[in-house]
Length: 353
Image (tube, rainbow, N blue to C red; front, side):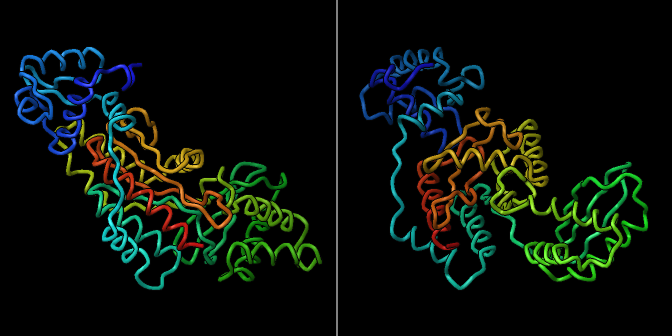
Protein backbone atom coordinates (compact mmCIF):
# COMPACT_ATOMS: atom_id res chain seq x y z
CA UNK A 1 0.00 0.00 0.00
CA UNK A 2 1.26 3.47 -0.88
CA UNK A 3 2.55 5.58 2.04
CA UNK A 4 2.87 9.33 2.55
CA UNK A 5 6.63 9.13 2.02
CA UNK A 6 5.99 7.73 -1.47
CA UNK A 7 4.27 10.95 -2.56
CA UNK A 8 6.15 14.05 -3.64
CA UNK A 9 5.44 17.41 -2.03
CA UNK A 10 3.02 18.47 -4.76
CA UNK A 11 0.94 15.32 -4.44
CA UNK A 12 0.89 15.51 -0.64
CA UNK A 13 -0.29 19.12 -0.70
CA UNK A 14 -3.06 18.44 -3.21
CA UNK A 15 -4.25 15.35 -1.29
CA UNK A 16 -4.22 17.34 1.95
CA UNK A 17 -6.29 20.14 0.45
CA UNK A 18 -8.77 17.73 -1.19
CA UNK A 19 -9.35 15.97 2.14
CA UNK A 20 -9.53 19.13 4.25
CA UNK A 21 -12.01 20.75 1.87
CA UNK A 22 -14.12 17.62 1.69
CA UNK A 23 -14.20 17.29 5.49
CA UNK A 24 -15.29 20.90 5.76
CA UNK A 25 -17.91 21.02 2.99
CA UNK A 26 -18.77 17.46 2.01
CA UNK A 27 -18.50 18.46 -1.65
CA UNK A 28 -16.20 17.13 -4.39
CA UNK A 29 -13.12 19.29 -4.92
CA UNK A 30 -12.18 20.46 -8.43
CA UNK A 31 -8.90 21.56 -10.00
CA UNK A 32 -10.03 25.16 -10.45
CA UNK A 33 -10.80 25.49 -6.76
CA UNK A 34 -7.40 24.01 -5.86
CA UNK A 35 -5.54 26.32 -8.25
CA UNK A 36 -6.96 29.31 -6.34
CA UNK A 37 -6.35 27.95 -2.84
CA UNK A 38 -3.13 25.95 -2.91
CA UNK A 39 -0.10 27.56 -1.24
CA UNK A 40 1.97 26.58 -4.30
CA UNK A 41 1.48 28.01 -7.80
CA UNK A 42 0.12 25.34 -10.15
CA UNK A 43 -2.09 25.52 -13.22
CA UNK A 44 -5.44 23.74 -13.30
CA UNK A 45 -3.98 21.35 -15.92
CA UNK A 46 -1.05 20.42 -13.67
CA UNK A 47 -3.41 19.87 -10.76
CA UNK A 48 -5.61 17.60 -12.87
CA UNK A 49 -2.57 15.50 -13.75
CA UNK A 50 -1.64 15.12 -10.10
CA UNK A 51 -5.24 14.28 -9.18
CA UNK A 52 -5.26 11.65 -11.91
CA UNK A 53 -2.15 10.09 -10.34
CA UNK A 54 -3.75 10.16 -6.88
CA UNK A 55 -6.85 8.52 -8.30
CA UNK A 56 -4.75 5.78 -9.88
CA UNK A 57 -3.24 5.15 -6.42
CA UNK A 58 -6.73 4.71 -4.95
CA UNK A 59 -6.52 7.80 -2.73
CA UNK A 60 -9.26 9.91 -4.34
CA UNK A 61 -12.12 9.27 -6.75
CA UNK A 62 -14.77 11.08 -8.72
CA UNK A 63 -18.30 10.36 -7.45
CA UNK A 64 -19.85 11.68 -10.69
CA UNK A 65 -18.75 12.15 -14.28
CA UNK A 66 -16.97 15.51 -14.75
CA UNK A 67 -17.21 16.19 -11.02
CA UNK A 68 -14.40 17.03 -8.64
CA UNK A 69 -12.71 14.45 -6.42
CA UNK A 70 -13.36 13.19 -2.89
CA UNK A 71 -11.04 11.05 -0.78
CA UNK A 72 -11.39 7.29 -0.59
CA UNK A 73 -11.10 5.49 2.76
CA UNK A 74 -7.44 4.87 1.90
CA UNK A 75 -6.99 8.57 1.22
CA UNK A 76 -8.63 9.48 4.53
CA UNK A 77 -6.40 6.97 6.33
CA UNK A 78 -3.26 8.42 4.75
CA UNK A 79 -4.40 11.91 5.70
CA UNK A 80 -5.13 10.95 9.32
CA UNK A 81 -1.90 8.99 9.73
CA UNK A 82 0.55 11.26 7.93
CA UNK A 83 -0.87 14.64 6.94
CA UNK A 84 -3.28 15.64 9.68
CA UNK A 85 -2.08 18.44 11.93
CA UNK A 86 -3.60 17.79 15.35
CA UNK A 87 -3.68 20.79 17.62
CA UNK A 88 -4.38 20.93 21.32
CA UNK A 89 -7.49 22.08 23.11
CA UNK A 90 -7.52 25.67 24.26
CA UNK A 91 -7.87 26.53 27.93
CA UNK A 92 -11.43 27.66 27.24
CA UNK A 93 -12.28 24.34 25.61
CA UNK A 94 -10.75 22.37 28.48
CA UNK A 95 -12.69 24.50 30.93
CA UNK A 96 -15.93 23.95 29.03
CA UNK A 97 -15.42 20.18 29.08
CA UNK A 98 -14.58 20.14 32.78
CA UNK A 99 -17.54 22.35 33.71
CA UNK A 100 -19.99 20.15 31.83
CA UNK A 101 -18.68 16.83 33.13
CA UNK A 102 -17.60 17.79 36.64
CA UNK A 103 -19.47 21.04 37.28
CA UNK A 104 -21.34 19.71 40.31
CA UNK A 105 -21.14 16.65 42.58
CA UNK A 106 -22.33 13.67 40.55
CA UNK A 107 -22.45 9.90 40.65
CA UNK A 108 -20.16 7.93 38.36
CA UNK A 109 -23.15 7.22 36.10
CA UNK A 110 -23.82 10.97 35.83
CA UNK A 111 -20.19 11.67 34.94
CA UNK A 112 -20.29 9.12 32.10
CA UNK A 113 -23.65 10.36 30.85
CA UNK A 114 -22.41 13.96 30.79
CA UNK A 115 -19.25 12.83 28.97
CA UNK A 116 -21.26 11.21 26.18
CA UNK A 117 -23.50 14.30 25.88
CA UNK A 118 -20.50 16.61 25.76
CA UNK A 119 -18.74 14.53 23.09
CA UNK A 120 -21.87 14.58 20.96
CA UNK A 121 -22.36 18.32 21.33
CA UNK A 122 -18.79 19.31 20.50
CA UNK A 123 -18.29 16.80 17.68
CA UNK A 124 -21.74 17.20 16.06
CA UNK A 125 -21.87 13.40 15.91
CA UNK A 126 -22.89 10.71 18.41
CA UNK A 127 -20.94 10.44 21.66
CA UNK A 128 -20.74 7.15 23.52
CA UNK A 129 -19.30 5.53 26.62
CA UNK A 130 -18.85 1.82 27.31
CA UNK A 131 -18.73 1.33 31.07
CA UNK A 132 -18.74 -1.45 33.65
CA UNK A 133 -22.28 -2.18 34.69
CA UNK A 134 -22.78 -0.80 38.17
CA UNK A 135 -23.94 -3.05 40.99
CA UNK A 136 -27.67 -2.27 41.06
CA UNK A 137 -30.07 -3.47 43.73
CA UNK A 138 -32.10 -6.57 42.94
CA UNK A 139 -35.87 -6.29 42.55
CA UNK A 140 -36.86 -9.78 41.43
CA UNK A 141 -35.26 -13.13 40.61
CA UNK A 142 -37.06 -16.02 38.95
CA UNK A 143 -36.13 -19.49 37.75
CA UNK A 144 -37.92 -20.74 34.62
CA UNK A 145 -37.77 -24.36 33.48
CA UNK A 146 -36.34 -24.99 30.01
CA UNK A 147 -35.35 -28.37 28.59
CA UNK A 148 -34.21 -31.14 30.96
CA UNK A 149 -31.07 -30.16 32.83
CA UNK A 150 -31.33 -26.42 32.16
CA UNK A 151 -33.22 -23.47 33.58
CA UNK A 152 -33.39 -19.76 32.79
CA UNK A 153 -32.59 -17.26 35.54
CA UNK A 154 -34.38 -13.94 35.06
CA UNK A 155 -32.87 -11.09 37.10
CA UNK A 156 -34.62 -7.71 37.37
CA UNK A 157 -32.89 -4.75 39.06
CA UNK A 158 -34.44 -1.77 40.83
CA UNK A 159 -33.37 0.33 37.85
CA UNK A 160 -35.48 -1.77 35.49
CA UNK A 161 -32.65 -3.67 33.79
CA UNK A 162 -33.38 -7.30 32.93
CA UNK A 163 -30.73 -9.99 32.50
CA UNK A 164 -31.30 -13.59 31.45
CA UNK A 165 -28.83 -16.37 32.13
CA UNK A 166 -29.08 -20.09 31.42
CA UNK A 167 -27.83 -22.44 34.15
CA UNK A 168 -27.46 -26.19 34.47
CA UNK A 169 -29.76 -27.85 37.02
CA UNK A 170 -30.16 -31.43 38.27
CA UNK A 171 -32.00 -33.78 35.91
CA UNK A 172 -35.57 -34.49 36.98
CA UNK A 173 -35.94 -31.20 38.82
CA UNK A 174 -39.58 -30.50 39.67
CA UNK A 175 -41.35 -27.18 38.96
CA UNK A 176 -42.03 -26.88 42.70
CA UNK A 177 -38.27 -26.82 43.39
CA UNK A 178 -37.84 -23.88 40.98
CA UNK A 179 -40.75 -22.08 42.62
CA UNK A 180 -39.26 -22.69 46.07
CA UNK A 181 -35.87 -21.37 44.93
CA UNK A 182 -37.53 -18.27 43.44
CA UNK A 183 -39.48 -17.52 46.64
CA UNK A 184 -36.46 -18.13 48.86
CA UNK A 185 -34.23 -15.74 46.93
CA UNK A 186 -36.78 -12.96 46.56
CA UNK A 187 -37.55 -13.08 50.30
CA UNK A 188 -33.89 -12.70 51.27
CA UNK A 189 -32.30 -10.72 48.46
CA UNK A 190 -34.78 -8.04 47.38
CA UNK A 191 -33.05 -4.66 47.68
CA UNK A 192 -29.57 -6.20 47.90
CA UNK A 193 -26.84 -5.65 45.32
CA UNK A 194 -25.35 -8.55 43.38
CA UNK A 195 -22.27 -8.55 45.58
CA UNK A 196 -24.33 -8.43 48.78
CA UNK A 197 -26.57 -11.22 47.48
CA UNK A 198 -23.62 -13.46 46.67
CA UNK A 199 -22.13 -12.84 50.13
CA UNK A 200 -25.41 -13.69 51.87
CA UNK A 201 -25.95 -16.88 49.89
CA UNK A 202 -22.35 -18.02 50.27
CA UNK A 203 -22.57 -17.52 54.03
CA UNK A 204 -25.86 -19.42 54.34
CA UNK A 205 -24.55 -22.25 52.21
CA UNK A 206 -21.35 -22.45 54.26
CA UNK A 207 -23.23 -22.60 57.54
CA UNK A 208 -26.02 -24.80 56.11
CA UNK A 209 -28.71 -22.27 56.98
CA UNK A 210 -30.71 -22.90 53.84
CA UNK A 211 -34.04 -24.37 54.86
CA UNK A 212 -34.49 -26.06 51.51
CA UNK A 213 -34.40 -29.53 50.09
CA UNK A 214 -31.28 -30.75 48.32
CA UNK A 215 -32.51 -30.17 44.75
CA UNK A 216 -33.59 -26.59 45.47
CA UNK A 217 -30.26 -25.84 47.16
CA UNK A 218 -28.43 -27.13 44.11
CA UNK A 219 -30.48 -24.80 41.86
CA UNK A 220 -29.49 -21.81 43.98
CA UNK A 221 -25.86 -22.95 44.05
CA UNK A 222 -25.88 -23.10 40.25
CA UNK A 223 -27.32 -19.60 40.07
CA UNK A 224 -24.73 -18.28 42.52
CA UNK A 225 -21.90 -19.77 40.45
CA UNK A 226 -23.30 -18.09 37.34
CA UNK A 227 -23.57 -14.67 39.00
CA UNK A 228 -20.07 -14.99 40.43
CA UNK A 229 -18.72 -15.07 36.91
CA UNK A 230 -20.14 -11.62 36.17
CA UNK A 231 -17.64 -9.44 37.96
CA UNK A 232 -17.11 -5.88 36.71
CA UNK A 233 -13.53 -6.75 35.76
CA UNK A 234 -14.66 -9.66 33.56
CA UNK A 235 -14.15 -8.14 30.10
CA UNK A 236 -15.29 -11.35 28.39
CA UNK A 237 -18.86 -10.98 29.65
CA UNK A 238 -20.94 -8.40 27.75
CA UNK A 239 -23.58 -8.52 30.49
CA UNK A 240 -21.15 -6.68 32.76
CA UNK A 241 -21.01 -3.74 30.34
CA UNK A 242 -23.39 -0.89 29.68
CA UNK A 243 -23.50 1.41 26.67
CA UNK A 244 -24.40 5.09 26.90
CA UNK A 245 -25.04 6.82 23.57
CA UNK A 246 -26.10 10.45 23.13
CA UNK A 247 -26.75 12.43 19.97
CA UNK A 248 -27.91 9.59 17.73
CA UNK A 249 -30.07 11.98 15.71
CA UNK A 250 -26.91 13.84 14.66
CA UNK A 251 -25.96 10.78 12.60
CA UNK A 252 -28.82 11.67 10.26
CA UNK A 253 -27.35 15.09 9.44
CA UNK A 254 -24.96 13.67 6.82
CA UNK A 255 -27.47 11.40 5.08
CA UNK A 256 -27.66 12.16 1.35
CA UNK A 257 -28.94 8.90 -0.16
CA UNK A 258 -31.04 5.85 0.70
CA UNK A 259 -27.94 3.70 1.19
CA UNK A 260 -26.72 6.23 3.78
CA UNK A 261 -30.08 6.02 5.55
CA UNK A 262 -29.90 2.22 5.62
CA UNK A 263 -26.37 2.38 7.06
CA UNK A 264 -27.54 4.68 9.86
CA UNK A 265 -30.58 2.49 10.51
CA UNK A 266 -28.34 -0.56 10.94
CA UNK A 267 -26.08 1.42 13.23
CA UNK A 268 -29.08 2.45 15.36
CA UNK A 269 -30.17 -1.19 15.61
CA UNK A 270 -26.71 -2.32 16.66
CA UNK A 271 -26.39 0.42 19.26
CA UNK A 272 -29.83 -0.44 20.62
CA UNK A 273 -28.86 -4.09 20.93
CA UNK A 274 -25.48 -3.16 22.47
CA UNK A 275 -23.60 -5.38 20.06
CA UNK A 276 -19.88 -5.91 20.10
CA UNK A 277 -19.16 -4.13 23.39
CA UNK A 278 -16.47 -6.63 24.33
CA UNK A 279 -14.73 -6.18 20.97
CA UNK A 280 -14.87 -2.42 21.37
CA UNK A 281 -13.23 -2.67 24.78
CA UNK A 282 -10.59 -4.95 23.30
CA UNK A 283 -9.77 -2.38 20.62
CA UNK A 284 -9.33 0.30 23.25
CA UNK A 285 -7.43 -1.90 25.70
CA UNK A 286 -4.66 -2.40 23.18
CA UNK A 287 -4.49 1.28 22.31
CA UNK A 288 -1.99 3.83 23.52
CA UNK A 289 -4.35 6.78 23.55
CA UNK A 290 -6.78 7.53 20.75
CA UNK A 291 -7.52 5.08 17.94
CA UNK A 292 -9.31 5.95 14.70
CA UNK A 293 -11.26 3.51 12.54
CA UNK A 294 -12.43 4.72 9.14
CA UNK A 295 -15.27 3.11 7.20
CA UNK A 296 -14.82 -0.54 6.32
CA UNK A 297 -11.62 -0.80 8.40
CA UNK A 298 -13.96 -1.35 11.31
CA UNK A 299 -16.56 -4.12 11.32
CA UNK A 300 -18.16 -3.08 14.60
CA UNK A 301 -21.76 -1.89 14.67
CA UNK A 302 -22.34 -2.55 10.90
CA UNK A 303 -20.37 0.63 10.50
CA UNK A 304 -19.08 0.57 6.92
CA UNK A 305 -19.32 4.19 5.85
CA UNK A 306 -18.86 5.56 9.36
CA UNK A 307 -15.86 6.48 11.47
CA UNK A 308 -15.05 5.72 15.08
CA UNK A 309 -12.68 7.73 17.28
CA UNK A 310 -12.10 6.01 20.63
CA UNK A 311 -9.92 6.18 23.71
CA UNK A 312 -9.80 4.04 26.86
CA UNK A 313 -10.22 5.53 30.31
CA UNK A 314 -8.42 3.97 33.25
CA UNK A 315 -8.67 3.50 36.99
CA UNK A 316 -6.07 4.51 39.57
CA UNK A 317 -4.06 1.35 38.82
CA UNK A 318 -3.89 2.28 35.13
CA UNK A 319 -6.16 -0.61 34.25
CA UNK A 320 -8.62 -0.04 31.40
CA UNK A 321 -12.11 0.39 32.86
CA UNK A 322 -14.06 1.40 29.77
CA UNK A 323 -13.91 3.26 26.51
CA UNK A 324 -15.46 6.45 25.19
CA UNK A 325 -15.49 8.23 21.87
CA UNK A 326 -17.40 9.51 18.88
CA UNK A 327 -19.31 7.71 16.13
CA UNK A 328 -20.05 9.65 12.97
CA UNK A 329 -19.70 9.82 9.21
CA UNK A 330 -16.24 9.45 7.68
CA UNK A 331 -16.41 13.22 7.15
CA UNK A 332 -15.53 13.97 10.79
CA UNK A 333 -13.43 16.90 11.94
CA UNK A 334 -10.59 14.61 13.07
CA UNK A 335 -8.22 17.44 14.01
CA UNK A 336 -10.74 18.72 16.55
CA UNK A 337 -12.24 15.43 17.74
CA UNK A 338 -9.00 13.50 18.41
CA UNK A 339 -7.66 15.83 21.16
CA UNK A 340 -11.19 16.23 22.55
CA UNK A 341 -11.67 12.47 22.96
CA UNK A 342 -8.17 12.10 24.42
CA UNK A 343 -8.69 14.84 27.02
CA UNK A 344 -12.19 13.60 27.94
CA UNK A 345 -10.89 10.07 28.55
CA UNK A 346 -8.18 11.38 30.87
CA UNK A 347 -10.69 13.60 32.70
CA UNK A 348 -13.23 10.80 33.14
CA UNK A 349 -10.53 8.46 34.45
CA UNK A 350 -9.52 11.09 36.99
CA UNK A 351 -13.09 11.79 38.10
CA UNK A 352 -14.24 8.18 38.54
CA UNK A 353 -11.23 7.50 40.74
